[in-house]
Each structure stands twice: as structure tokens, then as C-alpha cells.
Image (tube, helix red, strand yellow):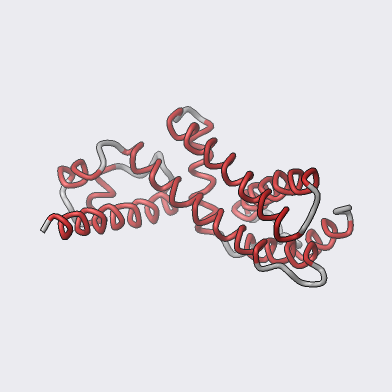
Length: 191
């Protein structure tokens, strides 16, 4: 019986996170209230508080989940690039993935902005996740592409910076981003 109760609680928390993420992607963190989340999930605020004691707890869980998804996608790119031109294929594949992450990108930027503008708890969690993400990425680049430690370290920083920067530019929609040209430039000037 207890196992069923844990599954129900986990399902409810997952449902809360899905709805909260959708609302935040649409309205932003500041414009999404606990009442909005409870209404979207079709539960009372009391039930919401049973699963999450604050909006910050929800935001932190969304950040953990989001950064896990982004990390997994980038690592998958690197791990599957064992071709004759691994650098070229890796960069092009990552650029293609970035070009399709508008809703994920929006949540990513809202989380980063919230962390930068004063949510210390979120900032610390994101900081730890970014360090872990970069270290994991560095290790995978080193193993998959058989690159030097120095190049793998530099490339891991560069890829994370490129992802963040291109997500911002994509969300602003000021102009069409030439992902193919960026890929070619990076590969040409990689070494």
C-alpha cells in the first residue's frame, strides 16, 4: 500500500512540474503564481503545498529537470559522434539541436534570469549543475573525440557558452541565426 502512495505522490509532483514548466514558459517566473499552478493542475493550493512548500521549491525542481534534459541532449550528441570528422559532426549536430529548443530555451533563460537577479537558492543549484554539466561534457569530449585535456576543457566551456548565447539570440528572434555557418566556422578554427 505504501508503494502505491509513493507512486501517486511522484505522479502528482511530476504533473505539478509539467504544468508549472508550461506556465513559466508562457508567462515567466514572476508572472506565474502558486494559485495559477494549482488551477492548471486542477488541485487545491493546500494539495500543492503538501507536495511543494514554496514556489522556489518548484522552480528548483524545474531547474534540476531542465538542466538534466539539456545535459543529456548535449552528451548524447558527443557520445554518438565517432565518425571520420567527429569535430565537424559534433558541432553541426549541436547547432541543429540548439535551433529547435525554443520552449526549452525560454524556460532556460527564465531560470537563469531568476538565479542572477536574486534567487540565491536557485543560483547555487544552477551553479552546481553547470559545473557538473561542464565536467561531464569535458570527460565525454575527451573520451569520445580522443582530444587533449586542454582542448576538451576549452571546448566544454565554449559549447556551454555557445548554447546559452544562441538560446538568447533565438528567443529574441532579431534575425535568422546561420547555424550552418557558425558550425563551419567553429570547425575550421577549432585547432
